Length: 130
Image 1: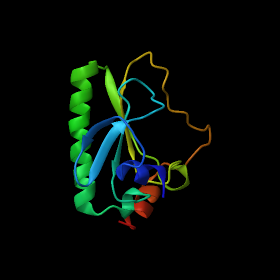
Image 2: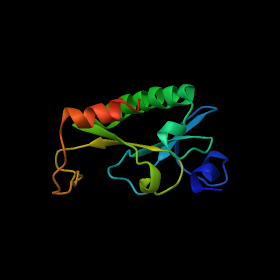
Image 3: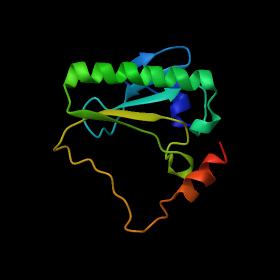
Image 4: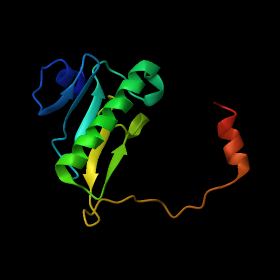
């Protein structure tokens, strides 16, 4: 059983922020900034494309509630919502990171220097799979 399933089943303690029958939000033990929250479905899924639409809607609605609370508590300059999929999901259970952001917090986006095709051909290739 993965660590987030253990958390959802109350087999591992966390600082819970919000919970319903389907989702759970708790503080990240290694936060980017104070107030960094992880939002998970209680049932095990790896990627966003595996989530039932109704559950995905509940996760998005919950993320909106959490952002509103973060804004009230921390008065940040912004916030980030992030989700990594596939092999980049280091926990192996779908989760959203939601955290307050500040201009000088040091968090950044590192991109490669590689050149990529930016064209209608690329857009059409993706659109054909939807």
